[in-house]
Image (cartoon, rainbow, N blue to C red):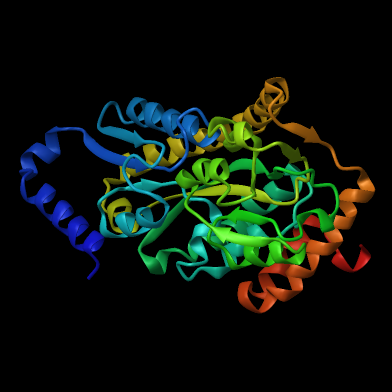
Length: 338
């Protein structure tokens, strides 16, 4: 058993042992909601919105404590903490579920599989999204909702206009075989790194660049250590709000229903502000004058798209051709027509 796992087991056990059942019945139920981005990002604001609505809808029976910016657990620790019950809710990026064994979620990492929010929401808010969340239950996880962050742009200390501009660059990615393949498709060198470590790595030259929705790039001040950003919108970054299944199933039915309603409202809010916040963050990056923002021409974006889309076929045996084809059907995408 790892040191982290032993510590979490001890923490969860001692917390339960120290709290009498009567006190549990009378005191508010504390739900720890941990995430790794800043509190003023779309995800951070949506988590706080959920906390507020949970308290209101349950009449104070539930108190959601939000821990932002990796203050409780980092990228690599939080999923184990959830499964052990040391925290009750997370909103990890969708790339986190592949290493957990739910490789179907890596369909969201495929470059250029969604061209806009309408196509995306046909999947995340439809039957396909519910089927994907259902695949987590065998791992002790209950999927509650998908939250948008946004479409990603590329940044580096050189202009990124064509596929060849990426050649040899060390590009930070999340832990994802699909994102590794995406970067290699344009000749870049993928570097897996925790989100909390990226600013310093860019500042010191450990990595040359990265990919991010604009709100993540701006709130983590990455634009201060990146000279160029290209608005490629090549990939999507989103989150699945998840909870410990045993915890969720053990809630009183009325409380669970109230939290479900709070989550539905929070999802509408999250997706609305994600677009607004990313648009606003882009304008702030431009206004800073520290990063030159480039809009690829249609021809340049198509060249990058053609270079990266071969990853879909390359990853089909890993993700599952069926789920990729199902998404194609929902969105109308046909890679053979590029």
